[in-house]
Image 1 (cartoon, one colour):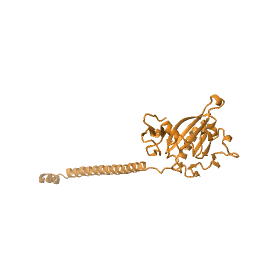
Image 2 (image 1 turned 120 degrees about the horizontal axis):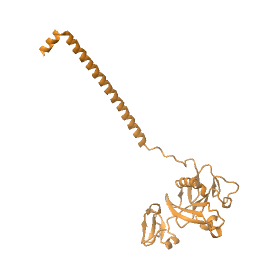
Image 3 (image 1 turned 90 degrees about the horizontal axis):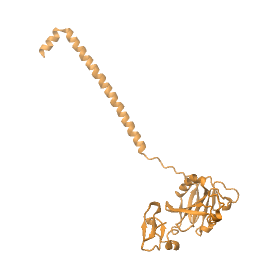
Image 4 (image 1 turned 30 degrees about the horizontal axis):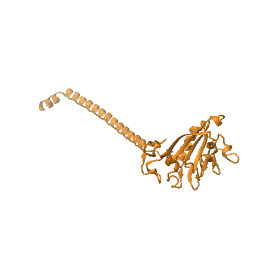
Length: 257
């Protein structure tokens, strides 16, 4: 080491070159360190931004209640909400209510009709005519839904098959108390949305309405219902069958249909 220092003392030009070289190396090191620090800072910001975005996407958005401003219909048997701009006259509710409403005034219009606990198929002028055919029964939100389509055979040969009914009933074999939605097939998409929202607010007020098995259900050997909806007086040998919305209670060997 002493020899190198002696040489540097004896050779000032070499000494200056070495100082310059070291200075350049130091400058380059500082630049590299600065670039590295800058990249680390940017990477840190990007990671924080990504975590924030992930947090926002994971945070559930508040559910919008589309029925918040709807009107409420309530009687001693049932309760539900309907669009705020619809009009009501007695037990008929419709988007457009000319004059004194009655089923016969709305051969194809969209409207709701509320029926009392004594209602039957014959209570409804449409189904009483024999020109409406039941196509399905299902349970939604704990209530039963019957669907009807119009037919054009026999005495109904002049019908155009556009009329539809979605009937909210207390059980698969009873029709009252209930709410029937009448509409044209062309309005199906709009009506399905409205019915879904109505069902989200719908409830029967008398718990005994659906609690006792009917004579028709006993004769048929089955009825629609979930596991916690076993009816009073259901025979002890009946079993529960879970098939989603088509779940039912039935006698062994009898199919739910």
